[in-house]
Image (tube, rainbow, N blue to C red; front, side):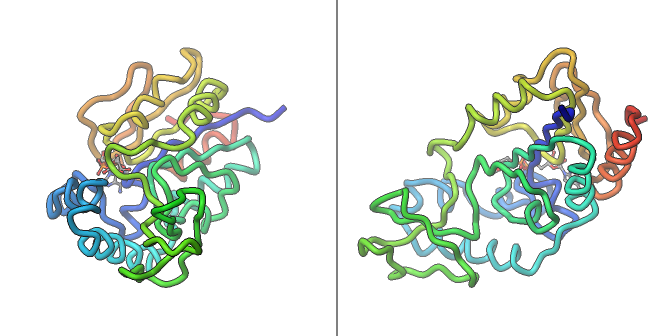
Length: 231
Ligand code: APR
């Protein structure tokens, strides 16, 4: 049986692919009020503002490419059973070749019916507009989880964390719950790391590796693939 590794990612893993994070300098929440563009109340008040916010982000995702961190994580599957649990709504993990990715906050390249949440459609162009409708005739919305909405696959993700012998958290400020609480589901005996250029707090039992994902993650992957602990 292959050893199980959990990769837990946030916006920082895609920063070197040119995608903005949320809370860093230049982050989205420094420019936008999250209530206005990422909440049910914001959607009710101005669906145009919400659609335009995600159209801008979708365009950036379609123009971006996976970086060395995404690619190294995909390559790790040669040696371990790897599950990527991501807070990101981009598809860079999948484009890099990761085969088992769980999106707890949804996916920006999909649209969802506002009448029936089980009706989900792939998006191939950046633009989702007012008047774009599902087969029931209701307005389509981005298939993402807004603040105050139910986060997906959280129990399944927690089970994966509890099963793993190695955990690598990358590029997340661990400030949004319930996703941030997943790090505490890990076994005491598991090898656990947090990778970021800075961290306000490091979860109990995790070793902090200061640095950017595209340079640190390939090193961690190399060490693990050679049966060593990252040094
Ligand atoms: N490599 C690694 N980490 C990085 C890099 C990089 N190149 N650049 C920035 N970081 C780190 C920052 O230090 C910070 O800790 O990435 C983290 C980004 O934090 P946030 O902007 O808060 O993003 P995230 O943790 O993914 O946010 C969680 O909040 O806004 C919601 O739904 C959204 O999924 C998101 C959730």
